[in-house]
Length: 270
Ligand SMILES: O=C(O)c1cc(=O)[nH]c(=O)n1[C@@H]1O[C@H](COP(=O)(O)O)[C@@H](O)[C@H]1O
Image 1 (spheres, rainbow, N blue to C red):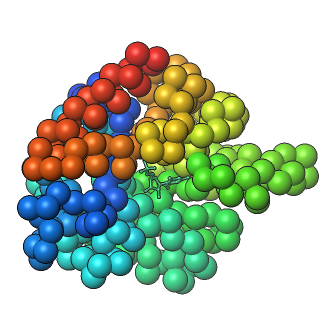
Image 2 (image 1 turned 90 degrees about the horizontal axis):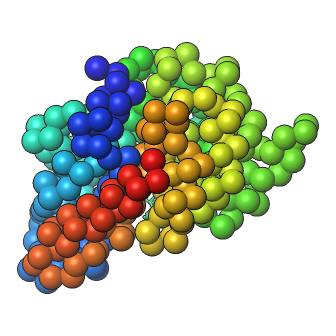
């Protein structure tokens, strides 16, 4: 099954547009996990098991694993999701962006090593930095377009030949690069007007929308700007607000409650 088919099935099955981001920071772990060799895996797997029926996808962020030499725990976590919660797509958030021959290696990393269903990619080096990922016809390739961070405007909002740079990325992605039909775009929840603009350019393409929760993006504005005619089309990511909803041994239950509330808040506006 392709990434977009898997995502469509997960939207339906769990009645959810919520993507739980897995950004494990050991400094924020509950005391009973501190000092354990497998703490990162244990922390994330408990969150995954507590929220898997409430989400349309999981998004592990590679830096949180690589910074602590915990890539083996990232591999184990993705295998755990595939094994215990089949059908929930895993987006590896690595935001790679390099020229073709090196991008080929990053694609092997994401799809061969980690067995992710989709990967985030920085397309600002152009077409040939995206193409190597499209050699995997069933895999999702989610391109940064209009990012949620304040500095995103420094470059992405520049006017180029009559359009904004992020609009050019959206147009190229939808009209010229999408040979597999598996491209998606990142648009921040902190910029709902631009979500609407991107939606108008790209049709039904899936949008990964981070920025609700800890970054303060507005759920109602995000959903109304980004939903498709069938009230799907979005993977609305929340990481810290779910992962660290609780501080003690009950953290997974607290994460479930936060995920449920977020999913329901999103569904209210679909
Ligand atoms: O590609 C991303 O996932 C991403 C793009 C973007 O524009 N903004 C953004 O915050 N992200 C990621 O989404 C997550 C947001 O985390 P929280 O702010 O804790 O919900 C982090 O993993 C970020 O790296």
